[in-house]
Amino acid sequence: MVSDELKIIIEQLQKNGTMAFLEGTTEEQIVLFEQKNKVKLPSQYREWLKLSDGGECFLPAGVQFYGIEHKPIININSIDRPDDRYIVIGALATGDPILCEREGEKISIYNLEGGRIEEDEIYKDFYSFMNDLYDLLGIEV
Image 1 (tube, one colour):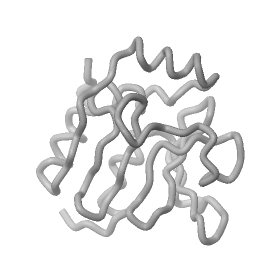
Image 2: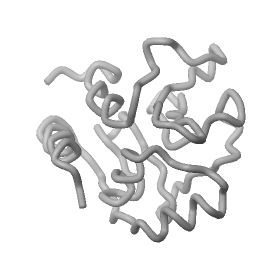
Image 3: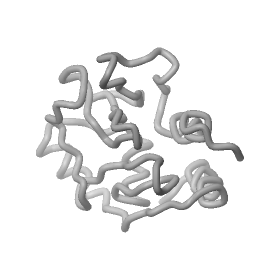
Image 4: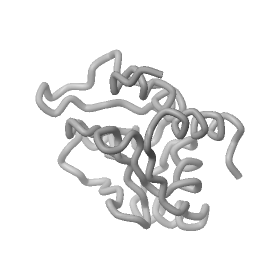
């Protein structure tokens, strides 16, 4: 079931840009992925995966999210992260990866060129990140 908060976020996104949402996955598939990879995905990203297992926002040059069944698949060992505390769950059009904590709720953007995570690009959770996409991408609404 999709929360009211996520429904509002999705409605806003669809009003203001071109999106490509994929078929969602199931709770069972998420649990299997987490067990196999010894990770715990953020709860709000888990909800997103049930709605859209990956997908893209603000085509053609916005954000791509990775899934657990649809390509690109989340690679928990991706080299595009600062260390093993993080998992790459997507990327900006710039190539900078979107990270989640291996066992937490925070979402952040890893500045590949600078080799750091900027303080103003750390979000308390996935919904906070989604709500900041307009500013992050420089999109006026």
